[in-house]
Image (cartoon, rainbow, N blue to C red; front, side, top):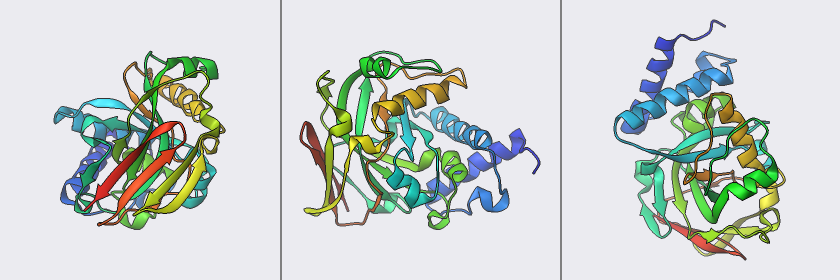
Length: 263
């Protein structure tokens, strides 16, 4: 397969933005270009994010995706991916979201971080990652796809900003040296009924290792994680359908709950 040129990447980014604005999904990229290199998919993602920023959006953090076996099995992938969080994606707990603003939304619960210091380099140690975290909180990530029917590969997901739609943030608590995030159990309920459970260790064995992975991936492009940024390390359970009329809540023993209402 010929390497896509800059014009194709720009046109693809424009098509993804049009799909988002018009709320009409498009055919997955890998249907037309089987074997699309992941680095090319990240270039499409970067071009799409750049257009959002040019239109006034602000980068506020990053997400790692497909970091748990449950998610990898659900989507048929075998490695993580990453996306960029923009300020207009982020909502506080208790927010109401209209189902109609997204195309094929699903929801996941995560143990999320706000950084207190920069994290940069190819070989970040786990203790460095822990020390960089200022606050931890529960989050609900609403994933969505601009491609038809969720029939996507990891390259499609990457190009589509790792399928990130919205992020609902719970109240933060200071990162405590005694807090064992790997052992923290999460329970997700939909309309008051438990729908999914998982522990922090479902994410790479320890959700802090997602920071290590993200720092290494960004370093290849001369970038890093910055103080103040929000970081989503990935879901601890398989994603759930998100329907109008539902209230989704995630809770855990040591963190405040996070809740989203969908109309």
